[in-house]
Amino acid sequence: MKRNKLMMTLGLLVMAANTVACSLQIDQILEVQDGSEMTIGIGGQPPDVLPLEGGTVMTIDVTIGFFDLLLGNVNGDVTVDDLLIAAPPFNVLGIPALNTGTVCVVPQDGGAAGGTFHANIYGGTADFDVTVDTIALIENPILAALLPGGGFPFPFQLQNTVPFGLSDMLGFLTGSGSFAISQDIDMDIQIDIDGPGPYPPVPAHIGGSIDMASADAFPTSPLLDDCIALLGQ
View 1 (cartoon, rainbow, N blue to C red):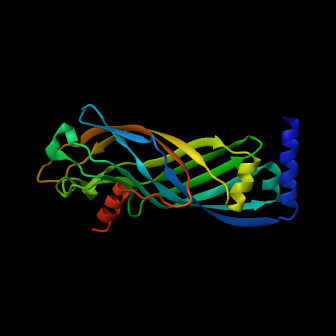
View 2 (view 1 turned 45 degrees about the vertical axis):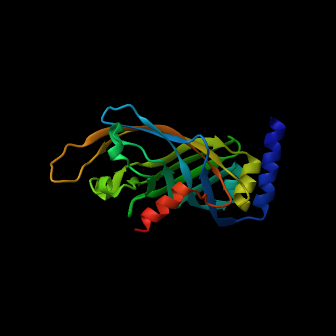
View 3 (view 1 turned 90 degrees about the vertical axis):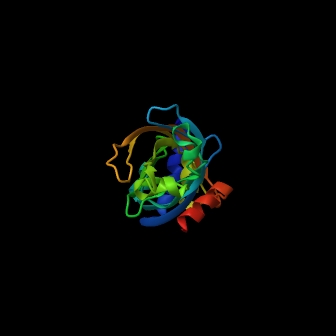
């Protein structure tokens, strides 16, 4: 253990010896992994289980100085440049006539889209704290017309701690590293209804989990194509 820490320290000192301070901008594509799913139960009904696919594009801006490297710290500001997550259709309240069409989770205009990243290789961990103000749009235009903005609220969060050692840090700083991060989903929401009403908000619960990992390119699929077409309308 002591030898590993010594090697990490020597590696950082080699980097720090030629570094006063540097600013780096690191782009990361994170792809939703197989097994990710969302459950949604509306109005107390049994939840529908929906597999998820898609991804996000993030930019991490870091400034690193001598003492940051010496202490093994990397701190950055995260900007979410793009996010698109798709789920298959489901029947609201189990009624086939109320089929949603493809569900598309996208950022809301003007909403929050970012957070922070902190890593310490001596601790062997990295912390993500990223929030995106997102909305789950539905493809069915009749149902979408009844919902403010054409969908229901679906705040996207990545708040987790992942393993992060010296090799991860070197890969991160050179742009060749990769990440894998998981996030549980567990939230109660209120779905507002537009119409001649007034209608009371409909309670709903969203659960599940999402696993994301670094990818070379943003994923493609028929469901994601549906979402791209919906966003282009």
